[in-house]
Length: 132
Image 1 (tube, rainbow, N blue to C red):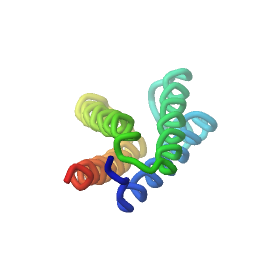
Image 2: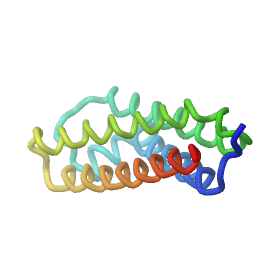
Image 3: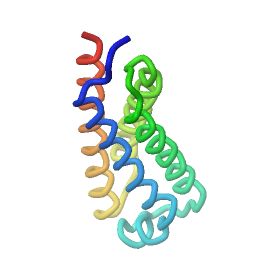
Image 4: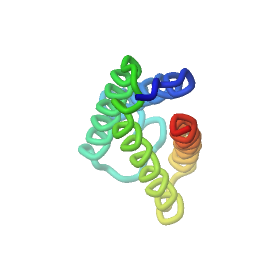
């Protein structure tokens, strides 16, 4: 069994914080965040709450994983989270390429994409370090 490295634990805390912050934005205050601040042009009251719920679940599991001792206990969840981030990166890229968005929504998507890329790089680095 391999012990979870300190850098991986830090990454898990960042994943949990990111999950909780964005879960709050998408789940609790989507009307303010999505339609008010980012001026999102498409009205879909359900999608953003589903997305926020998914972020809340991933944030909770990242937090629970932080308290585990062995890499093997969290490896599948960590890889699932990393795969989810890669999928979000693909969807964000398609969103930027295919949708005509107002400036604030476009800027928000770019900032979110940058955060996702940073989390992907951290996740891949952690997986490589944990492997050997």
